Image 1 (cartoon, rainbow, N blue to C red):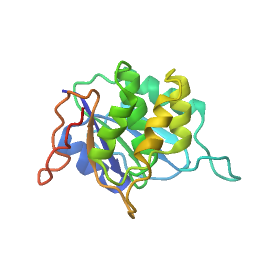
Image 2 (image 1 turned 90 degrees about the horizontal axis):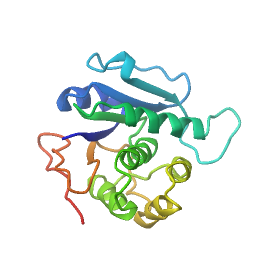
Image 3 (image 1 turned 135 degrees about the vertical axis):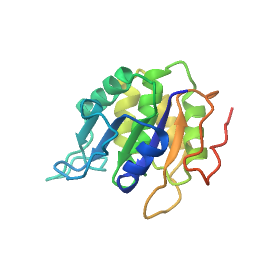
Image 4 (image 1 turned 30 degrees about the horizontal axis):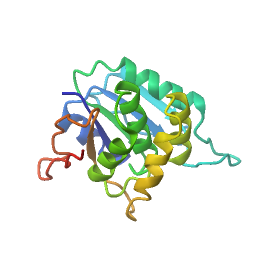
Length: 189
């Protein structure tokens, strides 16, 4: 069963190996250096240089339509034979937003509110990047439903860093535990 693994930068290697992933989306500041895990196919690694901001600021790269377009295209090209790792610096904002966008790109018939609640159940820390969500909402033709759903779950719990979590593409997907010692995320209807 295909699913998304969302994590901070310092957990990408462990996440990829633990879940048998071969594909990855990275959302980090432009020119930020990091080591791609050896199990990730270099041709199936989307590296987006984007800052975790919601409005343009001098010297920083705000999320734009090009970023979201590339997330959607990459997700749709994912072979779904193994999980897809999506990460950002802290695993709290850019990567959860991208996971929601990818899930809706691949399973557009699902309810935005239920998807956002599944994200909250999987991660109490997730606070999806508002700009990515708004652009994704528009590009996926959600008519404001995704934006509203994310606003409804609210800001995640305060944290220095998020922790790895798994998100199924559909509400009825069985999602394995994010780590062997942590139970799987609860399913919500």
